[in-house]
Image 1: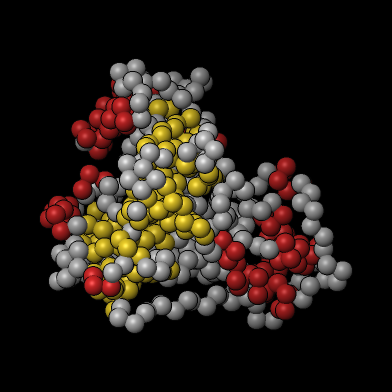
Image 2 (image 1 turned 180 degrees about the vertical axis):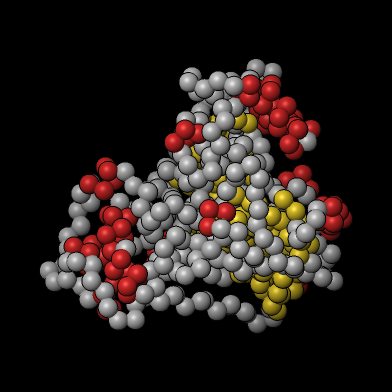
Length: 469
């Protein structure tokens, strides 16, 4: 899911047009000082990922490292691909986006430094300070440790491993989670991670799944495999992110007897290091009167035919559907038809398209606090809109250049109040030709791609954290 998450491509996966455009920036009159001007920017914006043992392919912690990568840094900054910020200009403002993006002055400083030779000296940028956990009066801290350690693996040349770990908070009373953070054990391979809530009613199902799989946890591409795939989120972690609180006055309900599943996405392009990630939550008592935060999922069908130049047995939709059932079970092979029906399309006559969309009418008044989009390896773009085509239309999320390796959830600076009858639409665009030029583990075998749990299948999904009313 999610995700959110982090690229492991080289520092500058650019196109010439992006590099050459004039973005109107002007270099300062004098060359900036590396230690005074440039190093603080790298520490604040870059070394959370670009550190020794981090998920990024190069470290920028020392002066020598920064000088070595000066040209690449400038190219990436000029093209606005680093630091990565997937939402496009059509998106609204999100909490914390200033910390993820460079200001015009910061961009100008880096470009001027590189133009003057990119020289660096002194101790370098180092790593950003870790944000301390914010524990409010009346709250307690809950540490959830995954045990034992797990070494990620993948079959058939794949470069991604999704593993779910069952964590027992041992709750003997109802509580609210008011903040949550995931602390990866092996930062170089942990691509992103999501905490899911498993209510007491499906706790036995999760325990059986865990017991049936050898070693730590179980394989869980896509969803966690518990409760029909609709388990609510507690939090998502991507490299560079520290502990974050839910908006004041809200909390995720953790009922008595419920469990937590930590789904970790491992990026095997960076190796296969032993990992023992853990989570830290702050809990408030049920009597605190917080508004319950819930997770809504908005899905659209995926029907991607082979392109004209492709041939093969799995280019036949029925064969691809049967393969889906063989890999994930009968429920998975029936899901594409159910999605088509829910979205008002004829499930008996599916029409392949590189654009997937679905509109859903809200049945209750809802306040939207955060939004996320999710696709897999063939995704090009995703947009989530409220009341499209109406006078009250607004974009909740627009990612014009989708990258599976950069995912996350975005908290709206201004929560959006929607009423019963409002329409939320998710639209995804895909490119099956990425099988031939996309890299990053995209399988080259031609096939008709449907909604499925595996990374090599596809999804079109909007995820909203909401409060009713």
